[in-house]
Image (tube, rainbow, N blue to C red; front, side):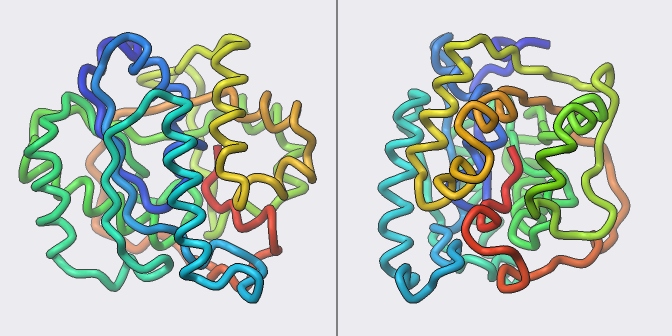
Length: 261
């Protein structure tokens, strides 16, 4: 399957930068082909810092909103909805969020919805909640839309094990869930230009990515993030996905990036 087969794409994510780490290549490729791409972000990520004194929530939320607009502009995405939910508190939100998302889905009429898998990809509770909401909104408003989840491959993990040894990414026991490359429904093809473009989009969200770039180096971040794979959603049992570690337990700065590329 190619990106051109996805039609109108609706991405539903938890925090600013989720959409770029996990689907920047997909979005840019779709927009370059003239497809409609719409992004939904549940929160403004106001607690996404290891230094809340310098970055109090109101200030960080405002800066991250500007960063995300600039980042999406690099990818050609101009349609963006922010739900304004509390960062770190998505799991406590009620059915009204599904109502809001279903209204957006009904307006956009997507051919494809892209969001986290049930485990939240990294195990973040906000990610898991967004996955549940997006699945429910699709069922209600666009049951025929394709539902794609980002996923890592065994091959990718083996190649980049040295990076994972240096950063604290996965926030729940038993993660990441990975698949063989042959099992992907969509493997986004990156050339040098697309890899550079994704790097620019990532660097636009500097409050979240500058520490990671300083730690790993720009070239490593560019090459590491120049891979995006997706699988079609599958029915899953009703269960709780592992144990999420709150932000305070994580390493500051670059580990604030809890949304693996």
